[in-house]
Image (cartoon, rainbow, N blue to C red):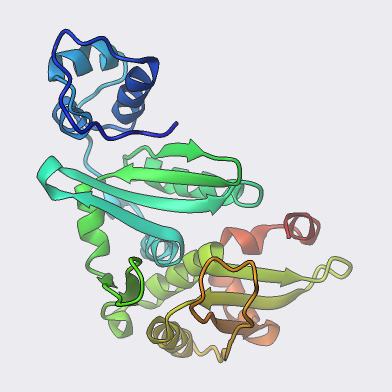
Length: 275
């Protein structure tokens, strides 16, 4: 369900459409307060309460302290690979979105939902024909991510590039979680469908600075990765070069027992079907 932003406030007596009501209830289910929903949709709070009283509850604080270092690192890796922010400071809107493939990544979506549920927050979900978008309404989580990831403006695109902050000081557990989240978002795991053996993991990024940081994190875990520039495909959504980080089987085996990547837990048959 697409949430549309209302340019003008509706008067208290205005009759809402079915889509308006659906949007109110979607936001209420994710934990937004009446004030936040009212500011976002420009609908009076009394009207919001009437339609959302079954779903609205006091805003809950995310408690990342209940997560392990590895799980926290995983969330940072997922954000670096597949995450974006929607921030509207004046309206008090702080959204983190994770975009996943509908046909291949339902197991990753389940794992993410479980982590946030453990931390006391519920993810909103929007499902399109080919994608799953998970949304978290939380200023605390946005602030948390800014401690580990810097988003930098680029001259040739509206998309901001991401760079890691202080990755050389991250704990080993955090780094293992980060690589796990990166593998589940921007990575591809190669399996031999006959033998079941892994051929390694390939991670893509469009920024050479981030590429070098990822290689540095892997090096600190005593893993030697190969890097090269990926081939351009006609159906690619961007003309920017794609930098590839390849972790071969021998190097991956040094880490795999300690990684929490969902893709590494998939069976070879399932991975072949999803490819």
